[in-house]
Length: 74
Image (cartoon, rainbow, N blue to C red; front, side, top):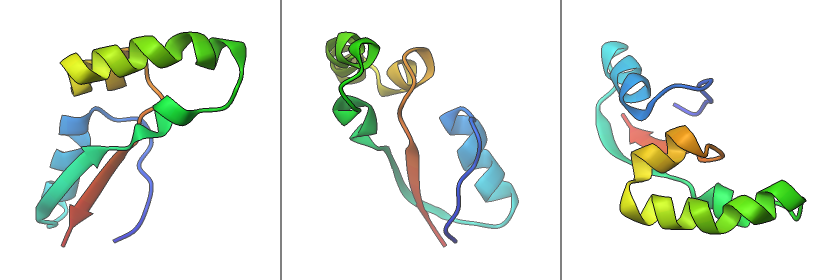
């Protein structure tokens, strides 16, 4: 399956896929937020995103946003 789910927490997204019969093989957050354009706010948030992501991926994705969840499922 290839598709996009609107904003969900990681747990909600994975559970929604399981509920529809998919087996989750792997998942990870994309590093998209660390390479976002040159807008001033994006430049200011680049370092906090990297630091928080290194400490706790889920919190960084929820609090600072701009991360996507990539899921491998069958």
